[in-house]
Length: 210
Ligand code: SF4
Ligand code: SF4
Image (tube, rainbow, N blue to C red; front, side):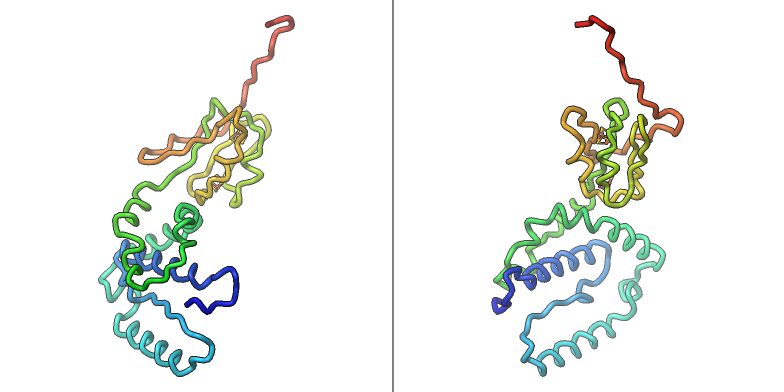
């Protein structure tokens, strides 16, 4: 484990990522034994073959994904699609822990707790642009990595919640004097302004006004 020659120590990152994925699998009712990680050197060919054969045997015994756990295929597909969409969010909120160099195997199973994973999905954050604060500067739309922000000149910007991957970029880049992007947790996101009602009416200062 400590023999990786690269400063990035990607093996530790792979380990924490695997532990997180195993807990997420448990969260949606999948058997976490379907995912495994082992560390070995390039010189351990026999061990590699043994570990791989054992793992293949185990997965065959568990049966096709979902069948072994008695999960309905359609439900599993939509759960997996939902989690796939949340991957950037999960990586962002768990970034510090994912960078931990876990050296004690006894810590593996408790490194991510069930309650932690439950709250990860229960308290998912959403981002919403306050129509009365947005000044249509377009910065958020230019920086959104997935094109989730409907943007037009002099129009209130609107986040498409279906496309949003919760990367938080819009929240970070919206200029402080506007602070138009709000984080929402534990409540529903307000409906977006309908198209045709998004024009921004700016007040023109009267000449000589203080
Ligand atoms: S959080 Fe903002 S920038 Fe990130 S994907 Fe969602 S809308 Fe785009
Ligand atoms: S960065 Fe802020 S003010 Fe500018 S368009 Fe986006 S939400 Fe509106």
